[in-house]
Image (cartoon, rainbow, N blue to C red; front, side, top):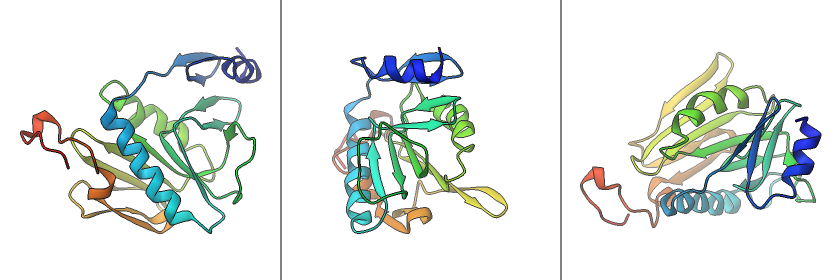
Amino acid sequence: MTLADFLAWESQQDTRHEFFRGEVFAMTGGSARHNRVILNLAAHLGSHLDGTPCQVFAESMKVQLADEAVLYPDVMVTCGKAQAGDEQTITDPKLIIEVLSPSTKGYDKRNKFILYRSLPTLREYALIDPASREVEVFTLTADGWLLSDQSRAADLALASIDCRMPMEAVFKGVEVAPSEGKGAVA
């Protein structure tokens, strides 16, 4: 399948699919914990970016990597224009955040990051595991991609958009995973 064929086909589908080098992959639904973290991030980042030329998108907006791939990041920020139009794909994300789930964790950490790094505009890639509350942020520097483990930090720091978000806001309304032994709502 060509990229053009995929985009035409996928626009007619009830469910989301990703595309990589002619192959199509169905996207599965996430848990309530997964969705809540995405909404927390999108709401906070949207407020932070209000009045700037940047916009935040969550889950249903595609990012296109040349003619090679079309992916659905959980959250992304683009600074190309201040007003959303009829675009169906974004080609210039500055920040991408993936909220990890058990079924996609390895894919998001390896394969997707390799693909995303081909985007010349990408400056930061964050991985957030809502169950374990592990938070890793990769920031592009003059020396390459720098990993910052922010799991124990008070704030999620996103240098690419000059944003700090309290971790309690990232995980607001999200149960602590049973393996953590607490079972309480954060």
